[in-house]
Amino acid sequence: MTEFKVLSSAEIVTSMEMLRIADFLFDNLLLCDDNKAEILKAIEYALSRFPHQGGFVITNADSEGLAGVVVINKTGMDGFFPENLLIYIAARKGLTDDSIINELVRRSKEFAKGRIGLKCHHESPLIPMFEKFGFATRGTYMSLKRT
Image (cartoon, rainbow, N blue to C red; front, top):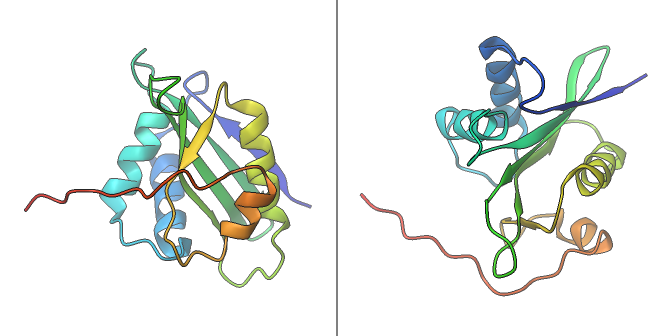
């Protein structure tokens, strides 16, 4: 039996729990080169009590521990840019069933207010699933990395 849990600024989430979620994502994200510190920043932002930040994290756990996680950050924008960004989504490596990822996306769509944007690697195997949920490509996301 699996359990889904929505975490937001309304809940008290310990630093240890945030680190456990960051470790899970770091170990299970596909085609992602973000380090644990960057992943943890996105989780902290999602769970922040500051009015200009926020979002939510949805976890799925089973008898073996975390089985899936999605992190959604609020952008503070609307109209020209989605109000929410799906920052990270992952299921435990070795799970062959996409049902956890599907349920994380479905619950994210329910819980988020406004549109949800996302960035994903152009070779991501999740693209067809996102398209089934109504996500559409609206251009190419590019980023300037400063050294």
